[in-house]
Image (cartoon, rainbow, N blue to C red; front, side, top):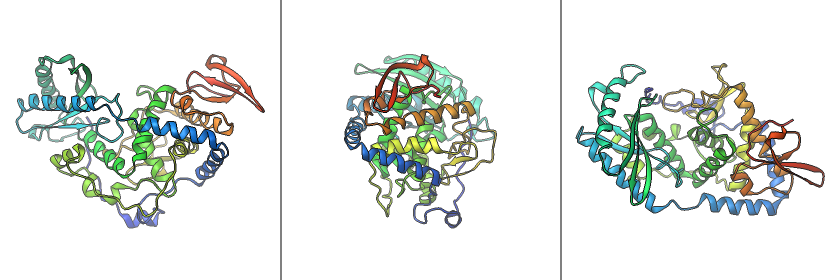
Length: 411
């Protein structure tokens, strides 16, 4: 388990001198992207009927309520597990983190729990972060949890971040649960994302839409492509640097006392649970872009991004020149500075750019729909490998192919 590094203080004057906004401390993206986005926006205006229908369906999808029964079940599970863990250490704290509580949740989100112990034997000594002690304690927790009557298939997984993984059956619902120990990077990332989600609801809406889209078209696949967390960081960066006026600010510069990794764990828990409210962030200029324009703006931004020469710094809210040229896509993990997208190689970058391009093509006809988009189906010009084709048809001036999914090369 890698070490959580409390964030250094950002020199806001230096950021401004290097081109950042003096109020939000974000640096706009490349001019090439904004030229591309203008073309995308013009297409959306020309096809106003399709755009209006797409927007209505996107809003319905993104605003679908979370099943209250699932929320209550997760709260009950957290209390049961906390009681079990406090039987091992009465001073410990159990914190919900991850997608269930970060403002990006849907009804498919698992329950992630962090068991926090402030013990001398867990002091940070090196990159292993007391790994053997963590393993021993989690195995003890595993033994106790698997004896609970509502628990099914409880296993200890000695992974990079060791976890106890189990299924909790409650009120007819099966809730998958992952329990980690002192995974404070995960907890502070949840705090950061939840803070961003509190500023503008479109962040959470885009996260829900692009998660479903990414899974259905193959972009989200934690083994070979992006994971859900990476896509959420890409959304944050886009809403900071790819929109004008910016929709999200740089919280690391504005509220370091909350997000710098030094906040007391008990206070972090209150923010995540909602018993303590985040401060209201003053946004001097209001950006009213619709979800539709933001969805296709996201596609255009990451299709135009210069992966070869630039990386993404979430800490500084900007793109910046790469220091590690061997990394095909560097997407910064805020709390340890490592690359969240470290499994992405040059070939995968090419595939990602092709996918983003492919989902922009339908805009230049009048035939695009939210249903096709969210299910990973895309209309595009003929010339792709025959095995990727599903249905072909023609419209005046163009010949299109409906994909079974968004992944595949085109010529």
